Image (cartoon, rainbow, N blue to C red):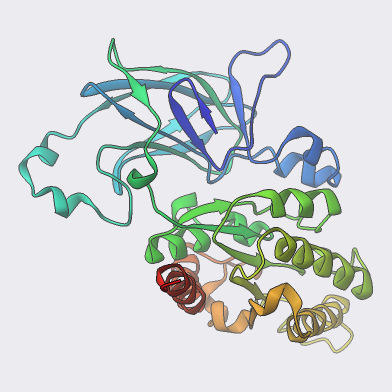
Length: 350
């Protein structure tokens, strides 16, 4: 989405709230948010993975942003390079002053290319809080959205629980989805929903409508004890079918539930463990059905991504910062075959 010479990445809607200044960065449109669970409507307003991107004609620019209900952190990058971290206080607009790093002028341009972002692109990246945009200018210079060749060429879309949303990492940039995307030189659209990944039909339709070159899905953990196994399977099937209809042949990776407290429960009658086993079998069935998602859907076991129980925090459900980084490495490895096939298909002679 573009607005006032800026590109808003992972933003489906810039929402004005009655009686309040600024525009909220929403990952989901209002009509989709209204169809979610009570908790889902709250978590859907978090701006994790949203970015404000632009190129300034002058060496100095400023962006005025803020946090809505609770404090949050914004990381500033110049291209692929971390530039600054700003703590935003709830209800208080903050002006972020930006100046082209002087040392960039003294190195070979090729050294600044990194993972796909031009070193001319400013990026304001938001963590898991409701971010608000108030304005931006270049002190008389011009602001423009980055050109396509100034950003990663391919995009990964991810949908899942709080784990996919980045819970447990100290900042969103170290969440495992963002880590995997960076390792592969991909842009990331993160549509994780903490405690509320329920594959509602309206949400599935919206996800399918988003442009992306690869898709990663982490389903099931939030629906244990909330949705019967057959209903979970039907919801997951609908999402997979909608994704396949929207982009036949697109590489799609689906994981079973990551190891957690229930997985390793010492009690034979643990209801969550029983549900988890049923849900995982449902995911395996969906992936084994001939023709599902045009044959491009692949299953990875959750134990292959979260390979060590000690990668969890003490709540035994969310990965730690270290866990997210290790999971990002493994997710990148799991996505690489699909990415390679995609690139080969696009360069093959016709």
